[in-house]
Image (tube, rainbow, N blue to C red; front, side):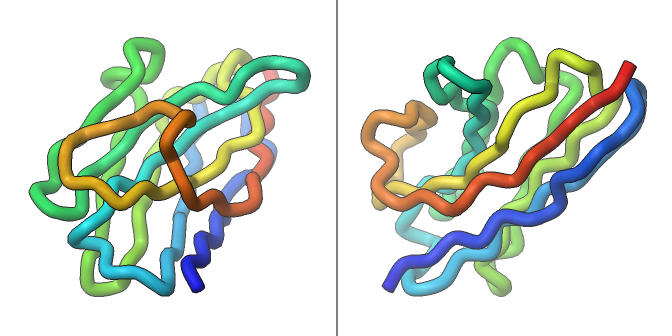
Length: 124
């Protein structure tokens, strides 16, 4: 079974950093897109950043470019999201998700596998 386990959320002051981890199991990472999505109550889930297991290509939402960095450890089937200079508006529940495809895709529609969310709260 495909499983995604997200961790690393927490409470941090504005300007601080957090690193989220998504440990994946049950599939070969090389064949998948894995990414991070975030959601506020009553709002749609938005794509934050995704990475291709096949070629390492990445996608970032405009709102996080230069602030967040996605990376992967293919040997460990783990994807990381380094979040720096956090702002109160980055407060969301963050989810990791995966889709079996090689071309870049970072939209919640079409991501087949989802982990449980991890709360990130940034205080001002």
